[in-house]
Amino acid sequence: MLIKEILRVKGSRLLSIGPTGRAVDAVKTMASENLGSLVVMEGTRLLGMLTFHEILQALHKGNGSLGDAVVGDIMVKNPVTATPDMEVNILRRTMLETGARYLPVLEDNKLIGVISFRDVAKAVLEEQDFENRMLKGYIKNWPA
Image 1: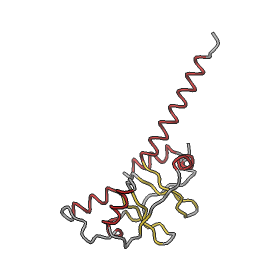
Image 2: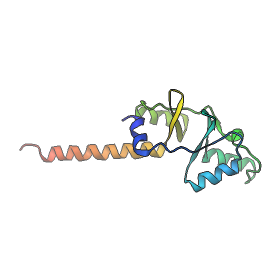
Image 3: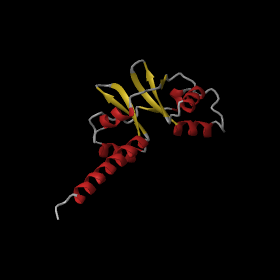
Image 4: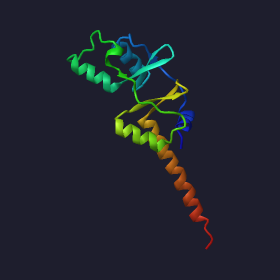
């Protein structure tokens, strides 16, 4: 299975924030949109990723307050990225090795989506369920 197949099912809705945006505003967006990450963009250029992990680290550093923190100071700069033609197993290995829970998907240096570890787990589970149904159907109809 390829990443572009997951994105096709998931959709390509993207929400972003600029590097000078306030972290507290990012939290509001993430909470209201039920997102675990925001892409940090400057125009059409990907600068980084902001996830709940970076927010928690900033809260810890600020003793429970984000204060005047800006996104550019707490984001993951130059995040690991994926391509639409990447195999899901390669993506899973990349995510496990880097600890990244969210990866931007780039095609010709253009952001086309974000894929989460949850998206990958769901796609793999659905693929396995389909294969199991096909195999059971094949076995059930096996000539005696």
